[in-house]
Amino acid sequence: MDDSYIFFDKSFRDNLLKKIGRPEEKLEFSKILDNIRLSFEKAKPVFSGFLDPIKTTKFMRTLDNAGFGYIAAYGGYDDSERKMIGVSPFDAQMNFPISVIDIICSGYGKSLTHRDFLGAMMGLGVSRFNIGDIVISSDGAKALVSDKIAGYIADNLVKTANVGVKAVVKDAKDVFFPLVARAEKTIFAPSPRLDAIISAAFGLSRSSSRDKKRVSKTLVNWLPADDLSKTANENDIITVRGLGRAEVKKITRKKDGYAVTVIVY
Image (cartoon, rainbow, N blue to C red; front, side):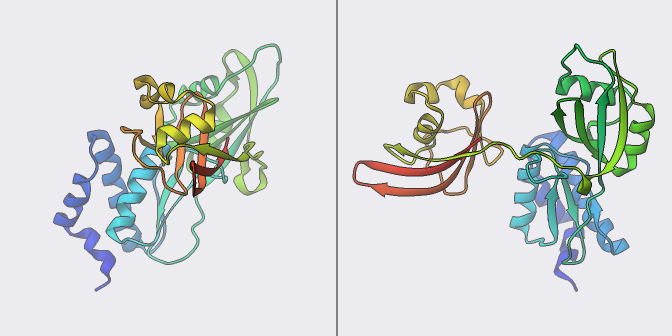
């Protein structure tokens, strides 16, 4: 019997769900486990709705540790934050059901925000799970959405925050998303601790980087960082809300501390 069928065993499923703490996350993760079963029953890939980075990381890590190999997360472009999780019974590339809604404002004079565009789409009755990233542009926005809801949004979205808009469905492969500006630099830190690297990467004092409010805004690999005294690892992605992200590329021991190569964006 295929090892993947162990995912259909109730006790194995229950043990996986125990690794997910919050009740609402358990419900969403349970749906992904249902997708695994459905994928094998129908012999085709099955996809979740869009998930935030914290849930995506937590769910992918749990499935990876459980040994299920044919999973992937994608949000429509390389720098996307909200992603779908796809599961497949085959070791093959999955075509994620993601479309782009190109929203063009017909009037000027008011600067529309991410919240404005999100609110307008959800005001049509569209679930947040069907909406991925919303990338603001000079004349409107580009919204990543589930294929199944794209036509409905395009037909019904005519106004955003009292500004007239035109919405057109496009294939995600045909839309250019500008790359996020990145700066690679080598910083020097007295230790490889998270607080030391955050301090050097973002120009903060060491005490400021350890401040309780700062800690509450810090994520490591999209998961909350509850202890900034822990050692950072190469390939960690450190997010500090309000400041940006630092991707740790290389940590080198020096005589008087550590040289850390980071990409800040």
